[in-house]
Structure formats: C-alpha cells, structure tokens
Length: 214
Image (tube, rainbow, N blue to C red; front, top):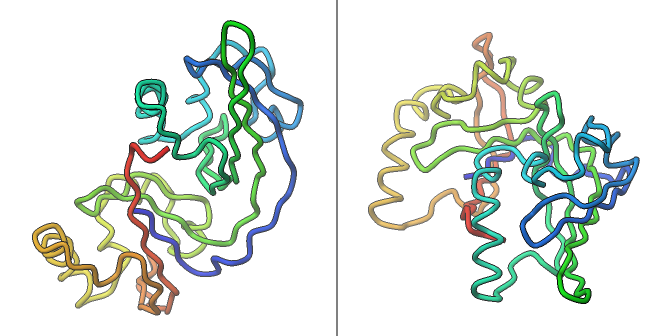
C-alpha cells in the first residue's frame, strides 16, 4: 500500500537525467544530472545494478521484473511514464517520474530511462499488507513529527488517533477477507495524530501496488 497525505498536487519538474541499462539491469551510462540527483559519482554507478537507485521492497524485486518481461514480452512500464520512488546515496527516498524506452542494437538491447525529480509536498508512506510501514519520505517527518527510523517497522495505526488506531488492523483483515474496498483508491479527509499528541486533519489517498507491476 502507498499512502499519500497532505498536499499531493504540488509536484513540479526540477531537472531531467538519462540513464541506460542492459538486459541484466546493469548501468551502462549516466549523465552528470544523475550523479547530482542520486549523490553518486559516475564511477560508483556504471557497472552497478540499477536497483542501487531504488528503495526496498522494489530493489529486491527488480531483477524479477526484468526476467518476467524477457520471458513474457509483456511490458508494464516500458513506453510509459510513471511516478515512482528513487533513493539517494544517503538513504533519502524521493519521488521521480520515470519513462523507459527499449532500444534494439545489433546483438543486444538497451533500455533508456529518463528521470525527472519531482519536488513534492506529499507525505508518502509505503506499507505492507499487514499495515506495517516499510518506507516513508522526508515530508512524513514534517507532518507527524517522527524521525523516519521511528516510523519504519511500526504499524500505521501509530499515526492515527482513537478510535481509528484501535480499529485499523480489523479494517485490513476485513479487506483481505472480503475484498471490499472502503479506502483504497479513494481520497478522504481523516484525522491524524502527531507525535506530540496533536490531532490534525489530512487528505488521505491510499493506492494498492503489486510488486510485479512493471
């Protein structure tokens, strides 16, 4: 699950970088903007897996994505543009817009990725199917007052006041059991709970993401 809170429509294009990878997902070339965007030198990136630039859990799944595409020929991201997460060398997770093109060359294939870094005031949280926080971006610190490490591995219910926090796990169980959607795919105004105990309103959007969605 990806949870977006607060000002989700204020994304702007900052700069564009180009990166190329081979069929195995190994970086073949990067430009200076890529180095600035992700905090690495060219020497640190060329020859390394492109998953270096992706946060968990997507990093661990990336090779499977490529294998599935090569086996089935079904492209879910190639030729399209999507907003996804990138990870800086210092561990910071940020939003990017990714467009991937496939280029056939004699005897091989390369993939060209065009990446736009987005300035985004949305607080974004990635949680697993049990509601456990896996990742969150810097804006979450501003919204809830916790350090990122204080949120990762914890239940989403810590960010909600009662009675919502007490009922959250049951909501998830009901969804898994019945498939009935009450929140996913919708935008709702709900109360949130700051670290200092303050209750405040947020605009909440929840999206379901499959790990094999490429």
